[in-house]
Length: 226
Length: 281
Image (cartoon, rainbow over all chains, first blue to last red; front, side, top):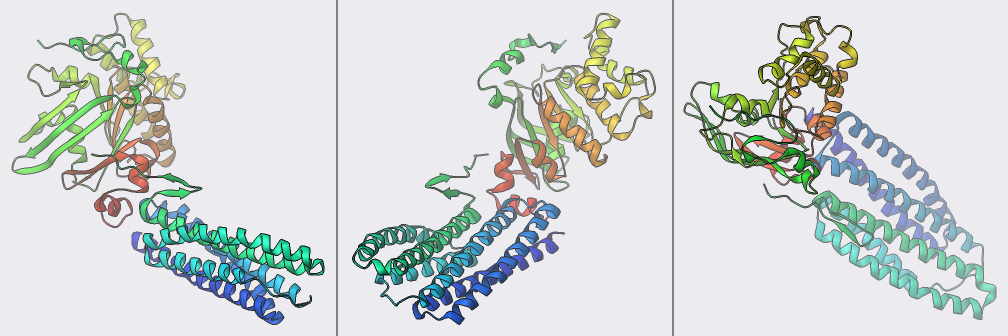
């Protein structure tokens, strides 16, 4: 039983990591499509999101099956719970990528505007957070997961700081209002990708330590002396 | 003659802690009922238990888990001195019940076993009627002066064991005619009929089907309000379902003990983790 269970769990784990890779690519492709206003590339990202959605449902079913059939405990339980949660975050990241792709398509139909440098920085940071959170999961590295959590605050601050400049530009050039709102939304989508990467990092910490770290609350699994 | 501990709620002999007082204490949930300290058990030259130190709390179910031969049943049998009757068995260390050493020279073992009852793996009703099975203990311990008192004890015990409704019309039928699950509940009724303080259960559901098992588990939940229950089980799901604390034994060592939640979510010791996740055992 144990061996079969471990094989099943490992297979789901590999599948989840593969989805992580696809989602990373989806984010990169979406952002490139946004920068180059490449409509066919953006459409590919949107189509790809349907695959990620389907994978999410399938992975969830597999995890639920393991829970129902094997009633796992300890690290096995934490791994399955983490996989379930990471799966949801990856799917949401895919949704954000698709949203960015749709923004790219809309922007391609409007007069061109210069995007702020901070959007590139938000993208770079969120992308790095996603990469590191997945790496932390694959390599069971809680230090790396903690790094991701720290980066999240920077991205949040960067996103917030971008808004006043864009609002100022809208006031100065009201005819660009739609493009600017699109840019603000894209920044927000990128920042949300960082948030989901942070969620993944929190799940990695839970997986490795049993500690729940969320909303600034730390619920530690206290060890009772024998 | 040693003191006979009467099991009335109001008082216990020898100045031991009053159970009714303990139950009203704000710390009653965590008050120590049984305290084992550096218990070693030897069967001849075989060293079966090594320095086991474990506290069992009132109004809780403590589960003991571990692979076969790990010492969990040996430890359980130490708690009501069942090992006394095993040839060549020697127990060292101390086991206190309400702060009094149960291995002290002045302890009456029969009286002790009326305070610490036991339910075995295989239902073992006496070849008597259902009524007589439950009435037997109260009779020999002199808990009932009149027939009506005895009947009340029997009915209450059967009710507490969740069996009364099923047997009320055939109280004088042979107990051996009951199903396995009913027989086990009868044995529980028999155990609680003399109002023990601690109930030891040695794999009480291993011979039962899932429905009978669920009934016994529900019953344990109800009984824990009044008794300390210690259960030895091979079913980790059962330990997880019913107990508040779990101890893991391996090769005669108590490897780890903690809240059941902790043991099953995030055990501290690798051996515990390997056992409960099915890596070995």
